[in-house]
Length: 169
Image 1 (tube, rainbow, N blue to C red):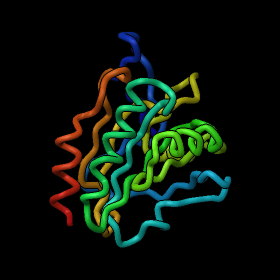
Image 2: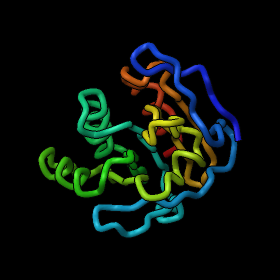
Image 3: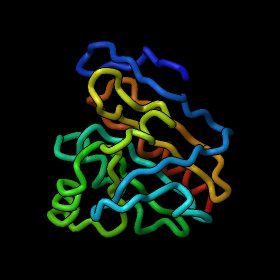
Image 4: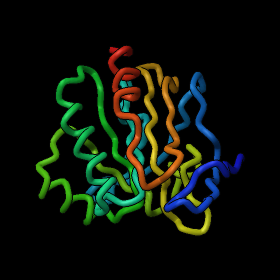
């Protein structure tokens, strides 16, 4: 386990707990839940390029922007899935998806076990929230791009993440 301390939230340092995700590593499996509280794992998306968009809460401004941005880009990406993971309750995620007509973005919740947050090193110590970031995983489940956004209240580098994903299809 490594604890990252180079991330801030509102200018205040936070500590991320769990295993840092590194480009070139085999992607670790994790279990989250969907709108119906059914378990979903990385293995459910085998053979696809996976863009994992990590957000603290979809009901905040930057998280909403990030979720909608990857939704709009996902339709054009062949053999690629977008997974937006937060610790929001699945009921809130379902409402958000319906209100925003999301069809190309799997909103998944890590609220039950925080398995993803710890396995990928996005869990904020003491807050039970996820930090902001993006992970791109190839069809063979190798990590090809990782961004831990340095200031949680700012958007990720969409262009870099999408360029990495497009290079894999």
